[in-house]
Structures are given as C-alpha cells and as structure tokens.
Length: 248
Length: 267
Image 1 (cartoon, chains in turn yellow, green):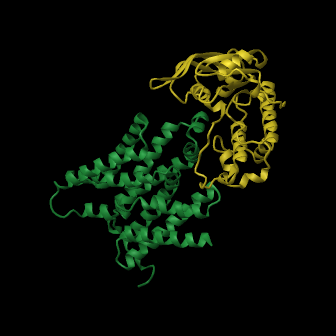
Image 2: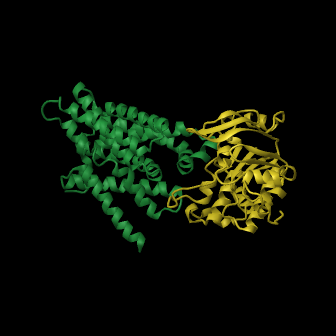
Image 3: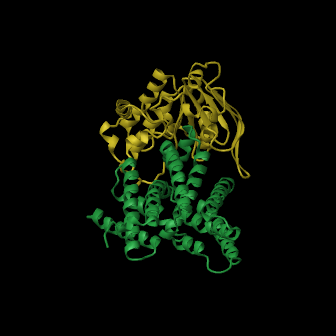
C-alpha cells in the first residue's frame, strides 16, 4: 500500500532541493543549491572534478549530513529508500568473496524470477550465462553493467547514478542511455546521473544541473549550457572541447 | 579403546553437542568476519570477556551468562563509539580489548586460591560444558541462526556496499549492531570449549578454507559450516583420546586442514 501510494502521488516534484549546503569541517563543499526535478525527467549533474557533484548526490540521498531541505516525492529520502535505485561512483569490494552475479542481483530484494534476471542482463548488454559467474571475476565494464542491472531490476521510482558509464565502451554506452530512456518511458522512472560527457548527455537528458561548489546553471541543456555558463563552470574560455559528436 | 567409546561419557556428549552447535554458529558468522575484515573483533571480545568472567567468579555467579551480558555491553559500546567517532573499528576494538582485559587481570587479583573456572575459560576445556551451559549455547545458536537466515542478504549487502544497502532500505545501523552483538555472544560461547586465546580461530579458519573452494555465497556458507564441524568433531575426539587441551587440538586440526586443502586447491 505504501509503495502504491507513492507511485500514484503526482502532486510533488520528484525531487525538491532548497538551499542545500554541505560543509566538511571549515570547508564548504556545496553552498545554497536549489532546484526541482519533475517526475519522469532524465537529469544530468555536471561540473569539473572536485566541484561537489558526488557530494550533491550523497546529500540528496541523506548519506551525509547537510543543511537545507531535500524532499524526494514530497518526503525525506530516508522514508522512500526502497523505491530508489543507486549506483555509486566507486564500488570497491573484496573480489575474492564468493558471490555469483545472480546472488548479487538478489541482495536488495530476493525472489526475482530467473527470466527477469536474464532480461535485465540483456538490457544492459550482458549474456545471461554470466549469472552463475563470480562477481569478482567480472571486468570493470561488466561489473558496472551488473551494478546498473541491480539498481534497475525492481523498476525504482528514482534512479541515481554517479558516473555510470565509467568503464563502459561506446557501444555499451549507447545501450546504457537507451536503458535509461526505457526506464523512463516504460516505468516512469526519474533518472539523475552524474556525467562528464556533456556532448552525449546534451542529447539525452531533459535538464542539466551545473555545479561548482554552488549552482552555476540549471535547465534544459540547450538553454542552460551556454558558452558563458560553461566558461563559468569550468573556469575556461574555450569550451568547444567539451562537445564531441555522439548522438544517442 | 573403541572409537565410539568417548560418546558414552556424558561430559563428552555435552561437549560434542556444544561443539556441533558452535560449529554452525561460528562458521556462519565467521563468513561476515572475513568479508568485513574484522577478525580482530572475535579476538578482542574473547579477551575482554575475562573481566566478565572475573566479575562472575568474585560474585559467585555462573560465569557464562555474566560473560555474555558483559560482551553484549562491550559490543554495543564498540558499535556506538565506531559510529560516533568514525575511528577505524580495529582501533575501537583495541581500546576496549586492552582496557577490559586489564580490568579482568586486576579483578582476578582479588580472587583467592586456584580458580578452575578461570583456567578453563583461558584455555578451553571439554570437561567444563555443564548442562546449563549447553542449554545456553543451544538457545543462543537457535536465536542467532534464525536471525541470520532472515538477515543474511542484508548483512552481505551492507558488508559489500554500505551506501547501496542504505539506499535500498536496509536498516544498516540496526543490522550492524545486531551483527556485533551476535558475534560477541558466539565468541563468548566458544570460549567454553576453545578458550579465550583460541576461540577467534574458529571464526576465521573454516570460512578461510571454504573461500578456497566456494564459487557462490551459498556454497561458501555450506562449506564453512561443514569444515567447521569436521574440525570440531575431529579435534574433540583427538583431545579425548590423547588427553590434549581441547581448544588447542581443535585449532591445530583446523590449521592442518587449511594447509592441506591449500596445497590441494593450488594443484
């Protein structure tokens, strides 16, 4: 009942962030960030290294202390965590620990049907034969795809991915962005992803959030990513380097 | 002597049943001890239990329940201090391990004469498992294993990736505290047979042997329990027939099995 009530609750924006600040000791990591994300949107968080992108994600999820207000579907993240899929920036684990891909996929919620495992792996570009392989034996790219499969297997209301295409080749990247669109179109999932690839995300996402210790710009890519804002975001005058030509 | 003759002795029957129960308990929990790299936890709790045992001896109480309560308090304090200070867990355990051990040594100084209970806790003894101890071990094992059956996925998830587990709705703080308390209870129960100095080996050796051969979490768990039972039963039998200290014999059997299977697996 609780889960259903969230899924039909369309009164709030999916994410409301108001005056969010994060300090680490005396150092300010993020200052006074505010934005709203509507349900079903695909949104990218961009910014240079050390700009506070991961901190923003972790503060939104309530994983680190912060000041200000963060509401997900009208409630604090801690109240609806079971409806959030999350892929962290780094997944460091004991690679010698014996656990199969299937067992790993089942960790958040057990009793997923075998066909669902195979279907999800296919969606992220992996063969179902990998299910009985040890998680530690996977390559970096395969592991990243398994993490994405685990985060999406229960069709979360909100999917948050921190640099998800790291280690994935160009073909896999296309599959990945198609998967995000499919999650949004078929399940109404709102997607927030941290990315460095401005050229690609400009063609995929509905909104971009540009952060560099503070909110530099927010809005649809074509409107938000102006030469002026990119210069401000990256502290560089020539921003053409950020735009390669890949379209998914 | 008939090989099954040792089973005719009631003390041996109690030791064997206690050993089998502890084999399941310590091996199952040991999987998470090795995964989380917290082998020092068992070591620390076992040594710290000396203070609880000394308190019980001074007060004229049954040492096992007192040591269990004492270790639960310590496990909870370790958890709280780890959460509040963000100090590495081995540092936190080190503080409590040495402080509680020191308290135990000071309290033992107030006891008079030879204390067989203290000696059996230090080195472990198959003679020391009373019927009341067996009941305590059985109830604790049932409760902890039941919790583990329902929580094994959550404990595995939070041990592999705490942040993902939090976001997935796993009650990470509650389950971590529960794991610490379960480990503390299991360690103190193991002290009866293995002794303070050696008990933590049974948290580590069976899961370590299992890791050499297991391909999945399920097989890891089953093999760890299986190896644990082989080590305990064989160790108890050898300690009976050759009149050797039970704890040391069990651990030596475990070490031999580890080395043997290590050679076997590398071939």
